[in-house]
Image (cartoon, rainbow, N blue to C red; front, side):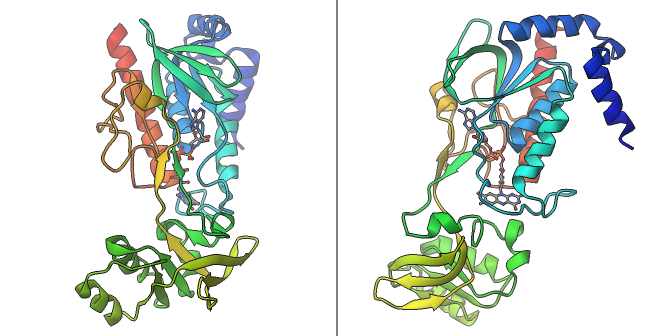
Amino acid sequence: MNTRRNFLRQSMLTGWGLVFLGADRMLAKTTTNTMNQQFDVIIIGGSYAGLAAGMALGRALRRVLIIDAGEPCNRQTPYSHNFLTQDGLPPLEIAHSAREQLKLYQTVQLTDDFVSEAVRTEAGFRLYTRAGRPYEAKKLVFASGIRDLLPSIPGFDACWGISVLHCPYCHGYEVRNQKTGILASGDAAFEIASLISNWTRDLTIYSNGPAFLQPAQRSRLLDHNIGIVETRLARLVHREGRLDQLSFDDGTTVPLNVLYARVPFEQHSKLPQVLGCEITSEGFLKVDAQQRTNIRGIYAAGDNVTRMRTVANAVAMGTAAGMMVNKELIEESF
Ligand SMILES: Cc1cc2nc3c(=O)[nH]c(=O)nc-3n(C[C@H](O)[C@H](O)[C@H](O)COP(=O)(O)OP(=O)(O)OC[C@H]3O[C@@H](n4cnc5c(N)ncnc54)[C@H](O)[C@@H]3O)c2cc1C
């Protein structure tokens, strides 16, 4: 069992791994440069996108440092779904297992820290962290994710990722056919309601104030038996994040199991913008098909670049970013 993995672990422990791969000189160089805190690539953010980029680069024999502050956006959700081979596992377990696999690569270093400053240098980039460490790299990959800006409705943050959900593809199957609400107004409410009607027929929009729906939208919603409640919310009544009721300003309550909400967000790290990376009108880092930002040498992958917010997608984009950074490094030196 796991013969290849055991071989890798053994060979890394004995220092023979890279010799076997024909890169003994690189092994020596790696050790020296690591001590100097200089890397080919530094990845900011060591969750799914960052770890995937790290694996692609580590396997390409690049000296890689992954710096992670340990705040993935899904940290409160008990189970992660819709990622082949990892379906239904706690999200932290998926990330932990990825980190363990990466630790087998002598080319990759992981550190728990927060990158607080980044500047351009002649050779690439210099980063400073909260722990006060300077690091240098030729290239950067931002896999820093986004920060959800949760509304200040009491109970909302405790339910986030447990019974207040952002995505039916991640969690809809588990709560199918349950009494479900949508916290949104306007076109977003109409769009989310039509989407969620695929998973349940017991659906109501809670707009927490005027619903701002067009007459045609109201009548389509009515056709599908989707209710609209415009009363202001006072709080979410829950037990350890499991929603029981919505409580309104006028003193009324409704029983509810599930609430979908699309919340605003901001970039988790402001550093790409500080370095000149462009942002789209939706608030994502602008990248091309090869995960390159508009600033040469800076790549981005994961939630910080796309609305298609899934672990599978973050891993795919991280892998692509790693491969493309390596390609750029080859092109610059070959
Ligand atoms: C509540 C919730 C539930 C979800 N459930 C599912 C699900 O069931 N299935 C699914 O496929 N997807 C799910 N998702 C989506 C999925 O979690 C994301 O798509 C995925 O986590 C994105 O990975 P990422 O690596 O881009 O970012 P993240 O996982 O958010 O990680 C970003 C990392 O970068 C670090 N970071 C940021 N700035 C810095 C800095 N300056 N220095 C150092 N580190 C930094 C952060 O601390 C964090 O660890 C869910 C999302 C949410 C919000």
